[in-house]
Length: 302
Ligand SMILES: C[S@@+](CC[C@H](N)C(=O)[O-])C[C@H]1O[C@@H](n2cnc3c(N)ncnc32)[C@H](O)[C@@H]1O
Image (cartoon, rainbow, N blue to C red; front, side):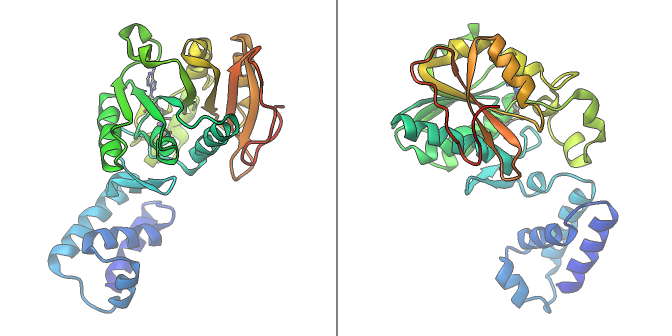
C-alpha cells in the first residue's frame, strides 16, 4: 500500500498538484474504503487488484488537475457534507464568514425563524448551513444553473433539510419568473462570481478549467454581479433584514460604493480568518436600527 501511495504522490507532484501526498492518501481511502487509521495499520499490506485499479483511475483524474472535491464528489462545509459536481463551485472555507455573519445577525435581532434567500446557491452550502443552525428558518436558493440546483436539492435531502429549503432555476436579473414571490427575506445571502474575466486563465487549472465559468466570471472588473445585485437587493430585503455579500480580496471599497449608490447602508464588514474583508453586511438605508458592531473577526465599516 505504501509503495502505491508513494508512486501516486510522485505522479501528482509531477503534474503540479499541491498537497500531493494528502490527495493521494484521500484517494486511496476512497478506493479501498479504509479510513486513515486502518490505512496506516495496513500500510505494509498489498492492495487488492480491484481497489488498486480504482485508485489508479482516481489518481489519473486528479493528475488531470480535476479538483479533489470533484474527484471525490464531496466537500465538507460548516462541518456538513456536501455533494459537489462539475456544475457547482466547490464550497470554500472563506464562505463560512457569511454563515457566521448571518447567524450573528439573526441572533442579535432575535430572528428565530428567518426567511432566507440564497442567490447563486451552487451546492446550496450557504443556505443549508444557515437552515441547519436555525431549525425554524425556511429558505429559497436560486441558481441560473439547472445542474447546480439539482445538486443543491440532493444536498438538502441528504441533510434532512428539504422540508424547509426550496430551490429554483432562475436568474437573479429576472424576478418576473415569480421566484421572488416567496419574499421578502430577512437574510439574503450571495457569493456571486467576482473574478475579473482576464484573471481566470492565470488561475490554477482546478479552478480555471474545471469549475463552472458562471461561478467565477465577474466581468472585466469583477464587479458585474455586484452591480446587478445591489441594484435589486431592495426588492428582496424585508425592512428589518440584512444582505450578506461575499467579497473577493480588496473589493470591499468598490462594492460598498455600489451599495451606497443603490441606497443601501453598510452595517458591518466581516473578515475571514486571514483578516481579509470577506463579507459586506448591507441593510436598507434609514433602517430602524443599523447595526454597527463587530461580526466574526470583523469591525466597523471602513
Ligand atoms: C461563486 S458561485 C457560489 C456558489 C455557492 N453559493 C457557494 O458559496 O459555494 C456563484 C453561483 O452563482 C450562480 N450565478 C451566476 N450568475 C447568476 C445569475 N445571473 N443568476 C443566478 N445565479 C447565477 C452560478 O451558477 C454559481 O453557482
